[in-house]
Amino acid sequence: MKIQLERKLSACPDQMTCVACHETFWVRNIRTLLYSDNNLIQGDVCLECTKLSASKFQQKLRSQASRLVQVASTHPERHDMIQARAVELLETSEEQIRFPTVLQWLAKKIQIFSEESRELEAARLGIEQCRCDGRSQHLGQKFL
Image (cartoon, rainbow, N blue to C red; front, side, top):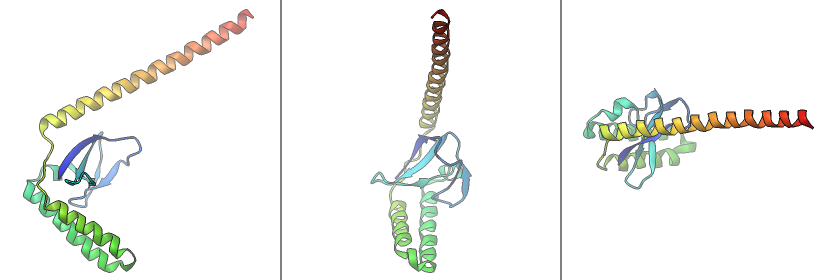
């Protein structure tokens, strides 16, 4: 499993629930997503859990799997779905984890800054283009 850094898109909620500790946390401009070795997204990870040792992180995932098994027993209408999720988390907890490095964090921050700068510049140029188009149409009407 790995924690992958991704840009937070505008459609993403500002608050997420950590897949490892089940705590709600605020998402800034970088999302920390847990992927299994099968490249399936398991969920978002809070910053506190990204700082844990590999064994503690795996233990938190196992605890969440156990919690889900208990939840499944009290929700018979969704038992199979919740049970399957618990098994998926338990299997993921057995995989070796790769945390993002400091260089990966820095590279992602630079990438996001670059993307946002390009988007702002494109928006600025688009507004200027609209202003220019409006003026040329207005001027053309005066001379006709």
